Length: 241
Image (tube, rainbow, N blue to C red; front, side):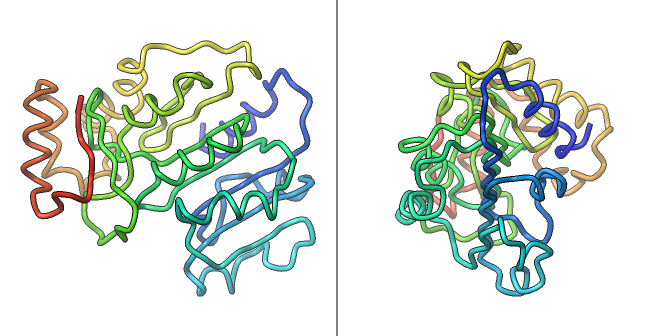
């Protein structure tokens, strides 16, 4: 299933009544949230800092869509949510900002608990390594971005079941909104990224070839190797097991 198909599946399986409210941070030209869902939503909030993308966005003039041309940060995201979503529950939150995703998501979860989370993770950082980039770093096209799968799981574990990892996109559903359960975090990571990658089935991640060896190291050795690899970024990230 594609990411869009998974989102439709999980929305259909929600065990709570809900308005269709969608929030996409880093929406680019085309959101992972399917068009038919956006068209039928009571509110869809899209945030994209690249003006070239927002100017040509297919939802730019859609009445039920708010499209903001700005960076979402840990400092402004709560106010953005309060101003635009107000008291509504969020059905889906999709976050992919290629930088300090962890701190923005953490800030949102302090005021809202969306029913479904979809988040990009830094797939090459193996479970159980916890890693995230701190606020103020702008992605430079390198391996240094975002948060690891383990960090996402640790952030949401109290309120969410992590139900899927599709390559570099993780899905979680609020525990009180589903009958779904979850496999172990290790199994989800292995099935979603590690095993397909090591078996050569994810050729689209060819740019990870120089760090694929991290997948086969012990957690302690992986931590040391990753920390060494990112030595030029020291002070700009947190890492641990």
